Image 1 (cartoon, rainbow, N blue to C red):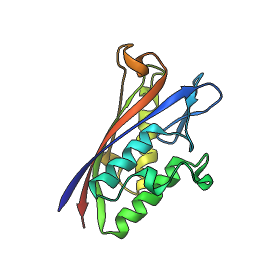
Image 2 (cartoon, rainbow, N blue to C red):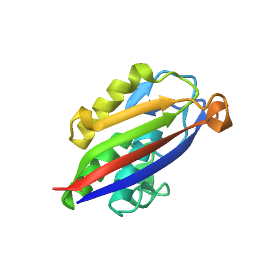
Image 3 (cartoon, rainbow, N blue to C red):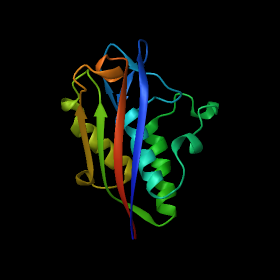
Length: 158
């Protein structure tokens, strides 16, 4: 049995925050604002996996009004999502994700993001695809006001 889920997330860029994507701290003048570390890529991936299995979303599992998740490491939250998924008998077939950001250039960091995600999801890096694109200076991402990410996850029952 197979299931497919889609995830989307968006966060505002602000000064004074670290930019963390796929568990990688990327040098940049701004970072993503959020209750946790605001890793927009990992948030979209978690929602894709949870959505595929009708297990809610990260807002339900890790609410932003719960101080225990303040500044949380999204990679650890993703490991918890994977633990819950496996407890229900599901595995990751593959994940395909896209980060939408005008700056900085993400290509030099993509492989490390994929490796981090694979490690925390306990799967092979070949099952994780991460891409980055700009929106040609259009919209809030093009104006460098924020970043967004889309992810699709194929899940299968063992």
